[in-house]
Amino acid sequence: MSLTQLSRATDKLISELNPEELGRYVAELTDQYGKDITSGRMTRDAATWEMNLLFEKRLKYMPAGDYIKFLLAQNAATTKILMKVIGEKDLEIMDLKMSLIELAITRIACTERILSVMNFSSLDHTEADAKREECIQEAREDMKPFVDRLTALRMEYEEYAADGVWAEIGKAPEHAKRDSLLTEEIVEKYGIPHT
Image (cartoon, rainbow, N blue to C red; front, side, top):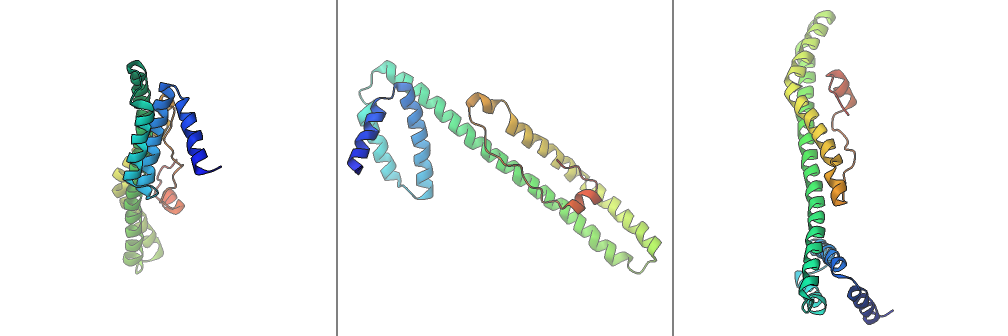
């Protein structure tokens, strides 16, 4: 099939769309053009030319009632697309916040370990163990505000991703079960709750 034949076939399919279907198609096409422009696969001028061509062929002489149906469907579809994008970005931001908090907890754990080795190497075994336990307890206290915030963020992350609004708009944001930056040793040693 030649490019001309493909173009004609595409035009025929588009011409058979009702106003609502055309509205959804234009919203998805606009989203795809945005991705293509961002990735460099398409120029802004090419996307503008394509959209102007679509307007000239399908929208310019559309009856007012159909045009209103088109606009309502396009706006609804665009809202769904934007909600999904915003949802994914919100989850990314929460993930970054959790990672920063986990790094702060790891820093406290590393500091405690360094201090334990440096300060207690000259003490006898029993005294050194008692002092190390003291350091661990102090580290737990230093970590507490971070652990509390991390726990709250984890809950917010999961609630946000599972919110019913995503079912209503038909597109849930994509998120993977995130991997914690905290080692199993840190989680166990300091009694950090994890999900």
